[in-house]
Amino acid sequence: MFKLNWLLLSILILFISGISLRAAECSEDTYTKQDPVTQSGLIYCGLTNFYSREGKVECLMQKHQISQGCANCFVDFISCAYNNCVGFDMPCGLMGTNGNSKECAKCVKGKCEPAFLSCSGLNGLPD
Image (cartoon, rainbow, N blue to C red; front, side, top):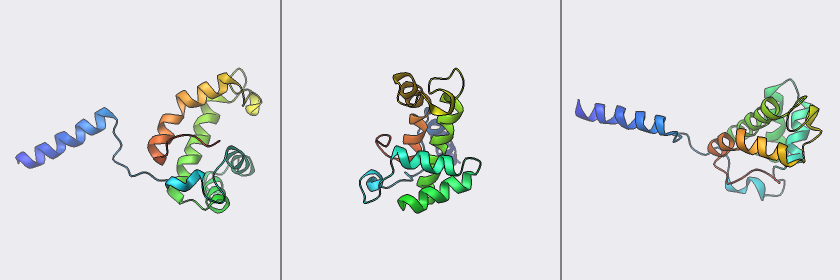
């Protein structure tokens, strides 16, 4: 009984502290291999499959030879940026027209980067 309570308490502490029990989804060579994931690749897959999550995942997997788990992390990141930072009166502008602004970068970094880094296991965003 003591072991079970200790295990449950440990899981609760990890959950409350925000430590992810999930393994990193992306490999360390995601940005350095022959066809690395780049901002332009994310934009391409995001726009060509605008209404299809599965399409974005497949596009990233094929274009950059990354795992499905890693592609899902990037798609979550794209969705977060679009939902939180892109739009009329939003830091990145309507359809991302202010995508290179400091305000846009600050919004994406603050609202979307932490979850992406936790999911992917990578040290930063693509160039």
